[in-house]
Length: 449
Image (spheres, rainbow, N blue to C red):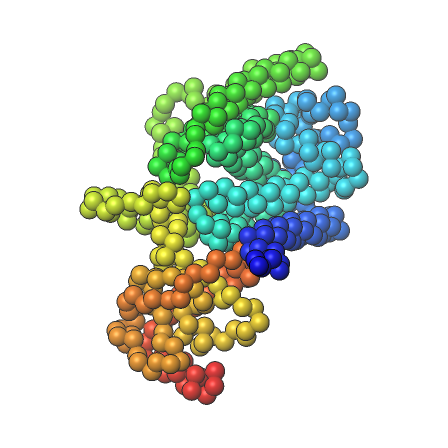
């Protein structure tokens, strides 16, 4: 007589666990956002950054005006210009003005919306990363981007940068998902039209980035993907961007009797018509150095990692090394994944049980946690059953290939909580594998640690 199943299948349990994990994640972000909004309102926060103060004040003034006047706001008194504001379209002010009209303190509404943009950016960048790397690395990215220097620079601002990043991610996520399901192409349109309303003429770089994404993904695409819907959505988005610009101009003329685009494009593109002079060339060279320095500093230290990875990939290609295909294959994905059994996976493997007390010597001895596959070039200290000392330990550094237990893939909070612990263990081991540290670890182990 066949045995009836006594409980839910493992697949069902995994799906339920994943749903609980996503629900918990969303709830945690909602609570964090609510706490941030409450703190902004209680302390009456105002940034020292000039653009942030201008944008926060303009949003507050718009919240008390009639919505029919929002398309053509004036500069607040006492600023570097007066009259109609035509530096950019008004898309960045509208959400903050709506929040203020809903009852939130008007002076802090723009900062509160910036916090919301940051949370959504973190969530979307993780979803986009999942297209290239496994879940563990994708979730880790959500934590790492919060520790970048540029994240601290723009943490509490009221200007456009965070909204622009969010809208670009919306368009890129739509581009990626439309390769599998055509209905996701709607996100491309929404993201790029939003860019026009927030950043104006500079939104032309949005379709370029989406097109580059599609071209690069040809190297790493797996089976079952098609670019037709994505390219179609990108074409529709480009037409929608042009239509939005024309509609904005028409509405602006109807409200003010003046042109928005004539003045706006003259201010934004006028510098390109300046005659080339020695002073102008010197300024351009300075600008190149200035922006290059920030391109390296803002994503530090991962900018240096990217440079090193690019150099390594080019050397491997010259040497005729084969590249891995499928998900995570190709130039970018292979580095990010580390081959799923490489050093990155080994370094990020967490401790799987949160009940076991974290003891640094045992953690170092076990190589940073359970699992990790075979980690080439990442050494682990001997287990308690072996008193053999690793060859080459006296000199420090890498000591060779050591097999580890097989990976047990999980998803949820335990992975994220222990990422830093496992990574720290590997770094400490690689940096301090010397006689003195080895004696301390062995003495601690002999004492019962």
